[in-house]
Length: 172
Image (cartoon, rainbow, N blue to C red; front, side, top):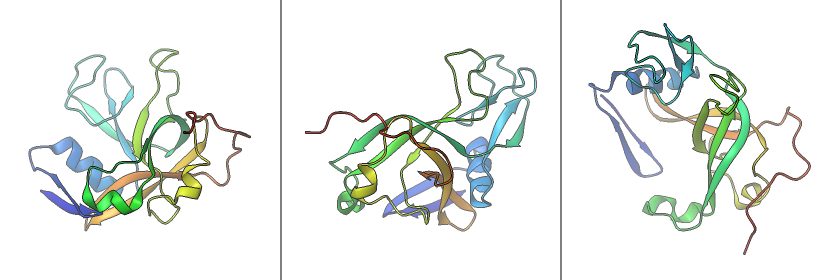
């Protein structure tokens, strides 16, 4: 069983949840891995017992580059978790990975969710939050929550070309 704490929020992965346990252990090693179905040859996220395209239960874990483009985001202004209250506003990003983009169809992509953080894994400051939107290029970083347990997060990819003005929801 994996147990950890992220900003005062208890996180637990039960032993019976083998796919998620393996996923978060790889993250703790700084290695972003996804399952690749043996029949379909396609990567999938989130970790699951069977391939969503073939229902095949056979898979390999494959290292994947954690880079992509913000597909969508949610800007949190009212934190439900008490430990997050001092961190608002913060962004939860849905990122299209560069890997396997447009497969198995032109409208599909691997989309991975995570918070926007600074390069050192701290939730991004409001000044940074206001600069990120749809189209922003990001890279993955890992936030350790316990020994052998880390969660993937997103930070701006400083080496990637960025859109001049990423699309953002109109501000109040």
